[in-house]
Image 1 (tube, protein in one colour):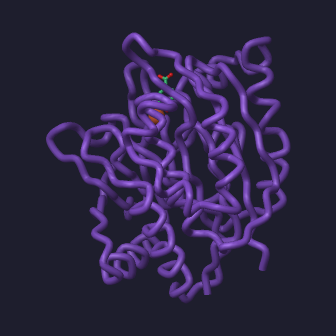
Image 2: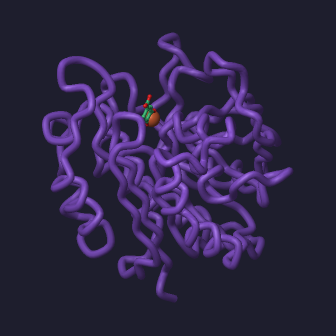
Length: 280
Ligand code: DHB
Ligand code: FE
């Protein structure tokens, strides 16, 4: 049986990827950011997942206003790196796990969650930056990835509660896959961020801290946060935090916090990161 053994949440700030790719990781501005992930890299090198499920959002790279899937699962064998305006990031292409992804699609759709099946997709910073933060600069990413793309860019976007329930459905689906795989699920994006307009750069440390504090013991409180509340309290792009709730929903009710990191500013946002392991 396949099992989800741990969850990772991490912001996916594109400037972090650019800093890494351009050899700036040791500069005073960026050093603390990468330092916050040193323990995480050691942890994941020890855990050695067989597959990672990465919940992220596409930023108009693979999709556009023409088609806006609420939840999409990448079932391809390979996902090329998107060109977001400066050429594709110099990182390895992402290798998929078509067999597991197709199984999750089958099981989750039969569990009343309608996933869009995507057989060709380029992946952008939403997915690649957390891989860089967790795995550094390998020749190949150390395991296959199942990408799950969530629309948090064009309203209407899914509620936190819907995302949490999807996490639970993903977990059930994984546990009905008949190969022994140890899986880590990522939720990416967040925390406080408002990228444009008069409130650009808005940071609400109290909101972010509450979110980090409640994620393990009381996710049910977090699923009730409305879109308006995310927008008002932590900025228009803070809505990306609903993807952390998919990760949380896929874990046990009781989880152990392994590591936490919070840093302001990175780009004009707050960078948040947390790792949980299932107790069993
Ligand atoms: C930025 C973009 C993002 O997609 C994000 O999640 C955080 C920051 C940015 O442009 O700085
Ligand atoms: Fe983003």
